[in-house]
Length: 242
Ligand SMILES: [Zn+2]
Ligand SMILES: [Zn+2]
View 1 (spheres, rainbow, N blue to C red):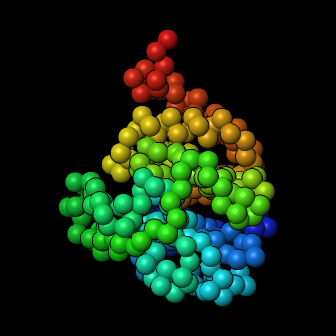
View 2 (cartoon, rainbow, N blue to C red):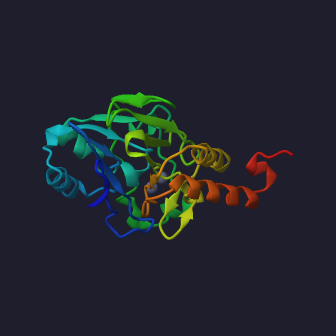
C-alpha cells in the first residue's frame, strides 16, 4: 500500500501497473471511504488493508465508484455484504452497476475466453447517486466532478483538503499519461471535453485508476497534456471551429 497523503492511501493494482491492473484508494477519516474495488478476487486483500489502516470492516462508511467497469466494481458485492457501506456512484452509471443495463463489451474482448471470468459483473444496488458538483462530507468535503466520455457516468473526485484529484479512467499513467482504451470509451469527444474540464482545475496530486500518481504540480502536467492532445485532434474532435 502506498501513502499518497496523510489521509489518502493507494492499493496498487494486483498485477503491477499495467492495463489489467486497477488501483483501489482509501480515504481515512473518522470512518473509512474506499474508492473503486478492483477486479474480482481481491476481497481478502482489501479487508487486510482496511485492518492495516486501523479500521474494522464496519468502519467502512462509503464505497465510491469512479465508473461501472468491472475492473473497478469487481469486489463490490462482497465488500457491500461484509461492510454494509453506502455504495455511491454517478446517476448515469448506476443502471449498469445495478444490472438494469447490460455492460457493453467490445468485440475483441468477447473473443478472449479468459476475460469471461472478469467480465461477469455481480449487480449491486447503488445507495446514493451523485451529480456534478455534489459534495460528500468526508475529509472536509470531497467534490464529485462529472467527467463523462469513458462511460456516461464517469466521475473524478476532488479532495480539496488534500489538494488531490482521483480521476478513475479519465486518464491513465501506466508508462506515461494516456487516454483510456478506445475500445472501452463510449464517447471520445466527451472524454476530451472532460479532460479539458479537469485541466482547468487546480490540484497538486492526481491519482489514476491505472498507473502511478503524479505527486507534484499535477494540474500543470494535465494542462500540458491536454494542450498537446488538442493539437493532435481534428477540429471535429477538439470542438475548435475557428
Ligand atoms: Zn474503465
Ligand atoms: Zn479501468
